[in-house]
Image 1: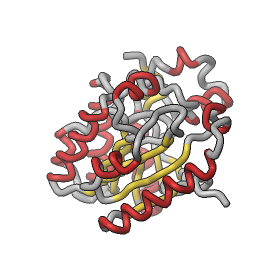
Image 2: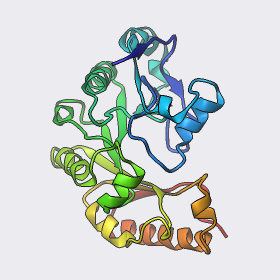
Image 3: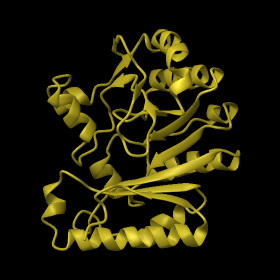
Length: 253
């Protein structure tokens, strides 16, 4: 695959549930149709010109060399490193990205640094050999595969994502699910209870609304809809002993 080089890698994130992060790929082949904040950010700063360009990922070839320089300097400040916030560490169908991500996690773990992973791809079985401090997550906003094919056409099928997450959970790792951006009924008719039941085995659920989407803001009662869905998530998590985080702006007055 195509590659680029960078000068820096690890940085403190401003995301509300994050610490340090890194993004060792530019772009994402998952092709999500809801407005992707990562694409919008990269376009705003002139790193990507078009969405078609965004869909062709570039691997940062000198990732490991940068980490060799940055880990000793930043290690004392880092509580955890999340992979990733503006790309996908296990991009579906990209073995080069998978191998670089695994090497990255090993390097961070060897330095005593915990990793937190989030993907719309598949969590590889090799992760079971890594630090038990690591936490692994998937994004899952529906169980409707037709919706996935429309909205996340290049991402891994939902059933396969869930299976890869469950395998790591059963291997003794902490697992989590990001239910964000959750769609309004005009985008897909579904019962959030079915989705929650499918991920009831996990340790944490993050829930958030869809942003930047006219289809959502034009949906009558979208604020009340998200308020009610958030309440359902909270009740479910409290009843099942699951940690949860409701993203800022999801619940409104």
